[in-house]
Length: 240
Image (tube, rainbow, N blue to C red; front, top):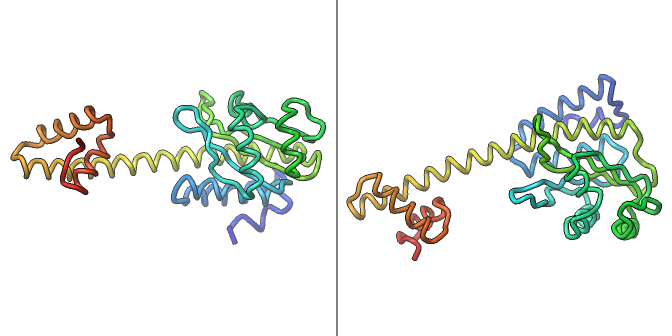
């Protein structure tokens, strides 16, 4: 059992139990080993803390693409995919406009009628999408989606808790991404160093010349320097 599960059954956003539960969640998110484990912890917390049956997180990636990062049920993946493919819907609006979007009933809400009809057919009636925003520039990292088969399932307390959870998730995801990027950079430097060593030994060149050779092959073949180094290490040959 996760450390916060006993505290969230009757969570009130302003009481001490809520603060304690979120503090424990923050520790767990800090200890998560990567982005995947981080977002999984967030959606599991959402199921415990909020009046939702399903939850999911979609993240913005480079190139402004949106990818499904975590879902508690396949129905959430369907709800997300319908919007990502159409580039429209409450989740897309939450990401684009950096605002919380509440749909009290997909059978009566008329903002995204085609999407709402499909989603209600999946058994989802209430929707609450909250953006994950980072920093003073309010850069959007992703969005937290909460869903219920009951109409008007989310009240003001649910919105408040969801926004607090989104803030925790934003910091945790940004930190996990930074750590993964740093780890990849360290790994890339190690690979390049090993590849340079191979070239220096084989062709009797110095380190500057070895790096220049790798860089030239990277540019000529439009291949990342890390991948050129990996190929040289694996095959002892450079890309054609």
